[in-house]
Image 1 (cartoon, rainbow, N blue to C red):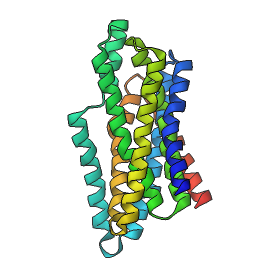
Image 2 (cartoon, rainbow, N blue to C red):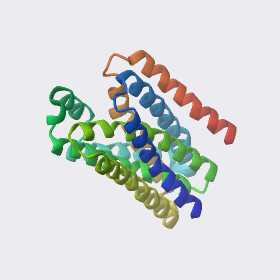
Image 3 (cartoon, rainbow, N blue to C red):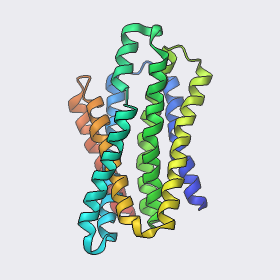
Length: 251
């Protein structure tokens, strides 16, 4: 349990680290941001496949394939519903700030931050489910992949809030809150699977589905929207292969 709690704090703390980096590189180029996010997308994609979906098949038994497929789609649909209620506003907020500067609508920026916080919950659950499966090394790999993805996400929430006139201190506190949501999600995922191990295959696939959804629906489109498609694609491949190598070497 201590390891789970420490990992949860590490996963959430990665967002805070990203926020600190965001303060230092407030004017980072789109190319730099796209490359970093694409690398993180590759990490998340590999973590979803090798750390969650493959184990789901292994634990699923006779109906493993059907349970895994169902879990993936339910996870994706879960985030799809969240998107309809509180959509991710990367492009909306970004374009608003670029065209209006400090007159950017603060409520839209805060909605953007709330959306990130809500999307962090299933990512935290994915990390917790990994520990609930009982494979500590694989769980740490999943958590590490999510943490790496949280760093660029923490970076990108700083500039919009500062441009909207939010004071640096409050900006940092808000970034910390988005990270704490992930800590809560990790604990939820861990206890849910520990209490009801029968749901483990479905929970693993569900978590994998949410991660793949985030990569496909948000990270890849965002990193391909500024003319850096080629570099972003190779960065994703490097991230994927990095996580693949880690999984093989530590598995």
